[in-house]
Image (tube, rainbow, N blue to C red):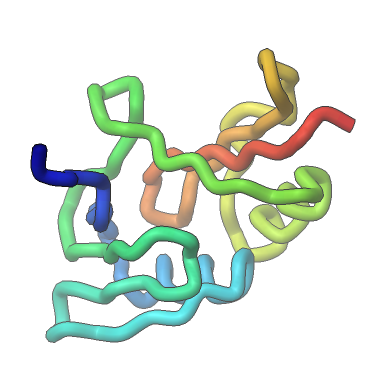
Length: 117
């Protein structure tokens, strides 16, 4: 059987420069632009990019939720807020860990999870 796995994820961004600045500041990601309407992110744990669009990605509308990992959720919350993100769900426990949800400056919803403390 052929091996097929998730390799790349693409997300919309109303403002590419704003989203790039947010993810650089909050998480230290790098970017490579491919024209004026697409930017690939690097150093994010999974390859992917942002494409220029007038909509956003939210699980409530059927989109997949991209979940990041952090050893220190409280620090991750602080970085998200300092970079201009909005906390959508404060840290909560679930079987196997804790997580929070946030909106990037373009309105995409993300989550960050980490271990129980």
